[in-house]
Image (tube, rainbow, N blue to C red; front, side):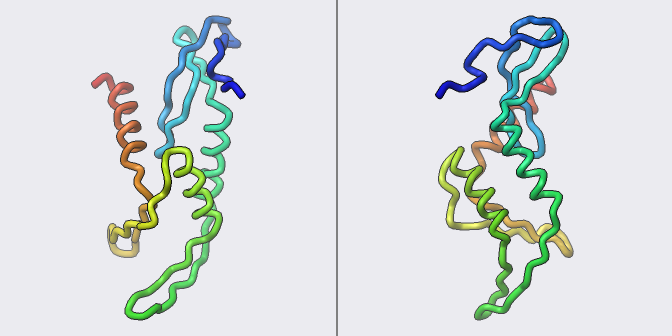
Length: 133
């Protein structure tokens, strides 16, 4: 099956050919077609669908239990979040079995799944290009 963005796409406003580009939103690198004349953008449907799943998960608040396991505490992670992380990782590469835990500030702990350094590097490049650096 061919990808929609492999074809020439004309802008619906000015009917000029659009160019491939990338857009960074909340840590996601979205493929877009961009019209330089009128600044119209079309986001790739699969990227937009994945991004919307992320927004829906991010806007939900999960109540989880903390349990004592041996000398450590364990927190269960909802299946929806782990499934989404595996889905995103399968597009890039396999998700690591190791999760990195960071104590950021009082009352805030973060879990970092997998190895997303390549994606973060791409996001930094896109931001530099947009800022003209």
